[in-house]
Image 1 (cartoon, rainbow, N blue to C red):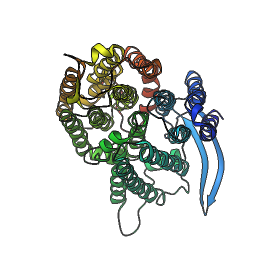
Image 2 (tube, rainbow, N blue to C red; image 1 turned 60 degrees about the vertical axis):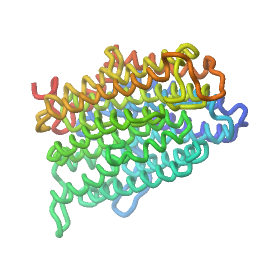
Image 3 (tube, one colour; image 1 turned 90 degrees about the vertical axis):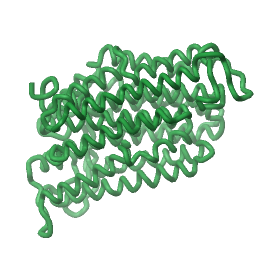
Image 4 (cartoon, one colour; image 1 turned 30 degrees about the horizontal axis):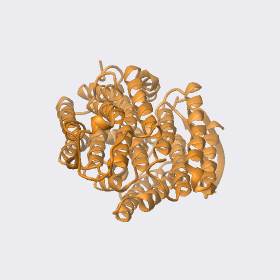
Length: 512
């Protein structure tokens, strides 16, 4: 019952935060968020799962099943459990939520109780997404995350918050509908009357799918793969489905940007891994080159867009599009290090992007501007914040002994020698060029804003940030370094889960 307890404590905590006086809501929400954080760390220390949650032979940790609803011959059950892919994402969710709440103490100065209540409600939904193993339970949590995200941007966001919130809602809601149609089309043509994800995955991989008289099994699988891929690609986001993301980040308050980039984008890549690349691996393999093109275009195009920006938040937002391209490339490689590296990149990017958004938020709280052209020489006035920001930027660039280096190294190693992906060395080499562009725009932005003579085109005094603003940054930097020095803190359990996936080639790079 540990997963249920984790979700229930977070959900009840959100109600408590709603009812709390605004004056104490921030501190109370932070205290409440520590409970699921400690719970997830206890679960990590006791994790004894093995294999893949969706595939035969996998042993889930903290698994629990209970009957829920019967619809005709179909049963919808409460089924939760964790494997080596979902466990790190649960820990990432609880860590980032606690740090995001602390980072909100300075910028959120109105309707605090509602704000923190919605953040905790969103955390409960995210935990459910990564733990649920019945499609309808999973879908309920998936949609539940969208509601607080819409309100957090629409109420506490910037000048164009309503436009950004509606855009996020429309994009992700249409994407959810497409994904739902694709999955249900598969389930209704399987011999098993259930929405249980492991059962569905094993039935699909056993070749038990049939098709209506007016089409073929191959056409049905390809159509289902296409609509599910499009739905999840919006959430990732993959170019050209990315246009909602920069607006959402720019208008969202800093703590929401942290959770959006750090965890919510991982919902898309996690779902792609579970549904498209595990359940329909043969379709993914048959279309590997096309998917790799989407991945490489996302890497290069996202990086070039970041290079052209003057708003620090937009720079970090577009860099997320680029980083998610690496995840897609690792997944389509179908090697241990490719898929494992992609999963590790989800964790690493969650920490690094969270750090970068928080650092930009601290700078904005002090200077009231995010424009590169409005400031210079901040290093002399905010040395601690600037030092941590530089550390996060180095993580994004893939500096050795930082998590970004380990994640990208695993992805490139796995992708380069993939036997599933024709032209794998070419795709990998082009994607690696994205690192150069990343280094270019980050160094350009830092040189302009952090160094040189101090200048600020506003009337605000620049002083050192308070301790509660800097502490979350420092914690994230330590985690980025810890995963860079010891990637096996997560990679070992990830590798155990991805090795069981169909088509995955074990060994370094695959096949050797």
